[in-house]
Image (cartoon, rainbow, N blue to C red; front, side, top):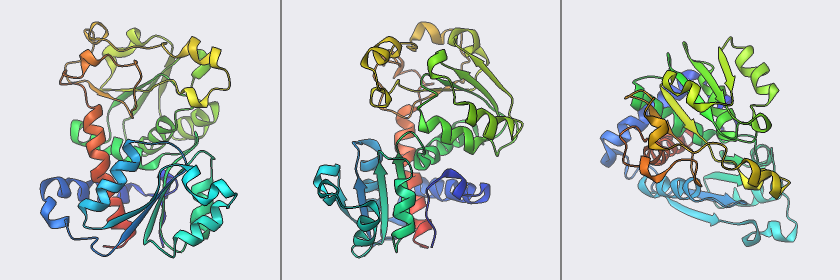
Length: 303
C-alpha cells in the first residue's frame, strides 16, 4: 500500500507519470468521470483550508466517487482528545483513501503508520505540502514544456513556507535548475534546506533581499505570503508582512515569458492589477492542483 507524505515518496518516473495522467484528464475528462465510482475519500482537515480541501473533494467527485470528513479539529473527536493514530484506524473503516491536513508536523506520517488505506499528506505545519508541489510541477511543465533548465526565484517567506521547501526538493532532481532565494534576512531559507537539498545536489543558488535586482533573470517567480499563523510575535509579523509587493511597475523589467506563481492564499504580496497579465499563473495552479490530485487518487487506489 502506497502513501504520499513527502514529495520524495515519489520517484521522478512516478511524478512524470502523474503529470502524464493529469494532462490526459485535462484533454479527456469523460474517460475519468466514473473511475472512482463506489470509492470514498475521507477529508480530514484539522487546520483551515480552502483550495486544498475543496480541490481534493472536487477531484474525488469528478472521478465519480464520494467524500466524507470534517473541515476543522473541533468538528472531530480530536476535540475530545482522540489521537491521530486512533482517528486513522477509525476512518480506515469508512473510507478507501484519506487526505489529512494537520498543524503538527509528522501527524500524517503517524496516520499512515496506523491506517489500513492510503494516506495523503495535505499539509503538516511548516513541514510538507506534497500535493501543492504536484500542482506546482504540473503548472511549470505546462507553462515551460518541462521541469528542467529553468531559473526559478522564490520570494517572501522562505523560512516557514512548506510549499517552497517541497518544490525546491522536487526540482532538485531535474537537470539545469537554478534557484534564486529572495527574502528578508529574518525569513531566509533554513540552512538545512540549503545544505541537504541545494548543496547536496549541486544546485546553484543565489540569495538576496532585492527582488528588483534579480527579476530580469527569472523564468519563474514563485511568490509567497508572510504567514501570520507561523509567527509567535504579532509585532514581528507586522514588520515583515509587506516586505515584497509585486506590482505592474516591478514587472516592467521581467521577461515577457515570465511565469508568476503563488500557492495562495495571497494577502497583498501580488497586486490584483497583475491578475490580467498573461504572465500570472496562480489561478492556473489552483486548477492544476485539482487535476494532479485526481491523478494521485487514481494512482494510490490502483485504478
